[in-house]
Length: 241
Image 1 (cartoon, rainbow, N blue to C red):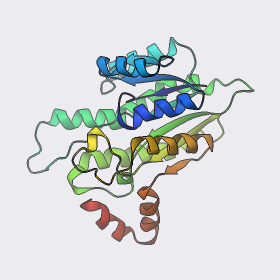
Image 2: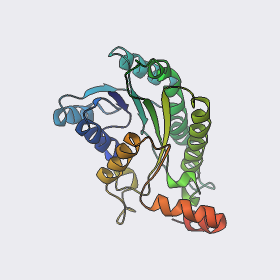
Image 3: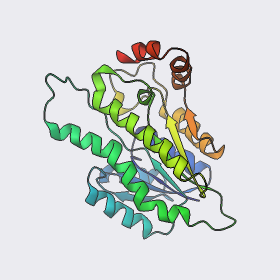
Image 4: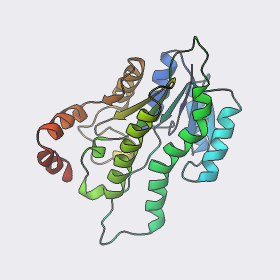
């Protein structure tokens, strides 16, 4: 099994690499920092690494070409993402948020488009291929301080659901992973009670192996229940989280 993991040099991504390797998979790891990729390769010598900027169409095409040069893939984990707090009344440069939306929304959709032909070319005895889109509890209810990020994750959730329906008769499973707040560099300063990235990664890999279509992790499970019982309460909880 050959699995592509984007955003693999830190946080959840690095732990996903570790978890998939432990499960016996061949891993192709993406990162945009060559030094961090070298560090990852030193820790996991069997892992192939590809450096690239997924926030641009050209970067995504180059990355997909590099992946396909290594052969067909069995799994794509769209984990790369970024979050920038924003005050709508003092938003700063648009390019910051354009890059965020491109990485969080355009990249997973574009990479799926580029790699899906490989994922669908299954041998009769091969296990089912999969696409994992890592969203967030904020895909269920947004946070006031992170409007673009919340919107991007809600968009990716909607895309995942629609793609799952399209591919329901194909050999490719479409899986959405919804982590809670995880202790990463992106959440530094507000993650004292956050989940460890290694625990989050274990939940995702376990969910993939169990063929779950949606993997709710930690407090995201509770949010799911709250949103079913009282969406207004769920939105209030998440608004200032």
